Image (cartoon, rainbow, N blue to C red):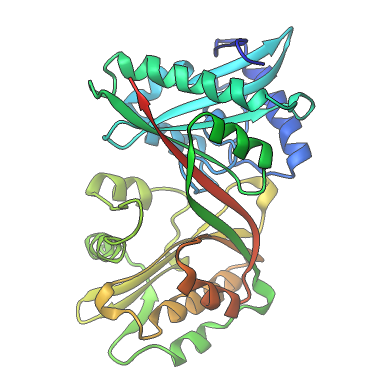
Length: 343
């Protein structure tokens, strides 16, 4: 497949949709986005399995929002390997943050996953990143970092990334829980530390939520934080529902937050994602995290959800017993690979 990639162009959408459908059928994946005949931008190419990070369940509008001013460049960020009327592979590159970082992802037709294909795919993506970065669209940095995220057990991909200079830097475990046996909200309230109360998010809580999130994740790998702009996008998303977004209030501030989001994929009816669980450092080691989770799981069940998934940083080994205690079991894992790329 090496050397046969070209830039996405109008008219590729049906064939690209066919590629994703074939890959989904074999992999058992339920990708968050699907091609729409009326949408000439291949936005779903930005959601191969865990779109724009580890988060699933994004909508087309949310992807557009995240792409922002780069929306006009989308076609240049998608490469396809075509043979006749069919598309055998799709490579997506995506600039993230403001520090010259890029993500690299791809989907390959199940019948074309021959040995050695990964090398050509990765090289095509790296060359496209070099080309776009050298145009000054991401500044004039002499080098940038590139991340690729793949299933942990995929040995061929791991070997291909390693030969291209990538090194595994982090693994995230995908865990799931059947809500039929989830704790009730009453059980969660019985364990809340003194001086703290649990309640739903309310209109007007935005600034307190931002402060709690940023304080809770200030020491987290990756340096996540919310600004007023990113918060506005988050709060207006159809995946933000106040009744399943729990906060722990203590003395006029939020000691912790637990935000769940429904999957908007029709294939994932009844599924929710435990998207955010954070506790301020000064309130940790008091059992607040498990109380927040118990409350959230009870609320999900009361609101008709049947199953919930979460992503756990494998380095956060202290959280594993907590999740397992609540009934979560490992489903799969995603490993993040990184390399520096000279521009």
